[in-house]
Length: 331
Image 1 (cartoon, rainbow, N blue to C red):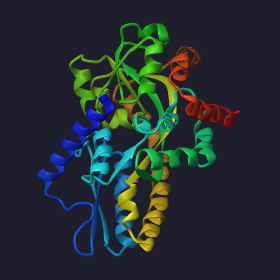
Image 2 (cartoon, one colour):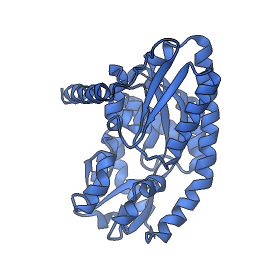
Image 3 (spheres, rainbow, N blue to C red):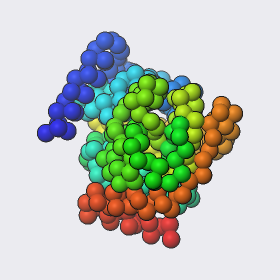
């Protein structure tokens, strides 16, 4: 019941936003179709730059018949709200990952703490049978079609006091995305996690509502968290990927040639995004250090051991099977 009420309220909010904007809807008018893509990062982030490239490629490959309007900074609402809006028809695309666990339990495996050894292990999973199974579940249970994916830098914990072992987490209030698996893992590790929209994190840290948060370095930088956090504790607790998705209905409304053009544009955009990721990630770490953040080495094995019971306790049989397959793929 809680979930249904939340989805209904979110859908109403996104509907109101769309009505206020007065933009053309997903179906477009005349010979032009317009898709609205809402996401959480800002204009300088590699996801936004890649989305712009994708929109440019789609425009080119469809002779302008399909246009993509991009709304960064949660302008169309939070990740969950935009997913609701896609179902309601007030949005069409978003950038999303483990948050989809709220619809498709399989999506939790996109960002399971300490499941992936490194980026090579991650890529093997995403582009293999396990990734295909997760994509299929997302299509069926979330109602969206993954078009391309971004590799994400590992998630690290930021704080003002150094966090070197799980013992340092006692009383530590931290933001996590609206992902039950993250809540369970961090509670088991000893922290006090709470779900919060990403757009609220900076203010939450500034006002002391939370003591820290966890994210890859690119989002730590783009959100300006070096202004309100001193340390990046190198937990590297999650290697993950994130999809750029479009609503199934919106995609299926396109004719076959336009679908093919979108898929070709998506493949080229993915390659472009990977180039940005490879060149920018190391630079971002150096920039954060220059901005005064200290990268703190931690006891990763201790964090993994502490989180493990919380990770496995919440898994159903399908999730546990996927989890075991992911671990085996890295052996």
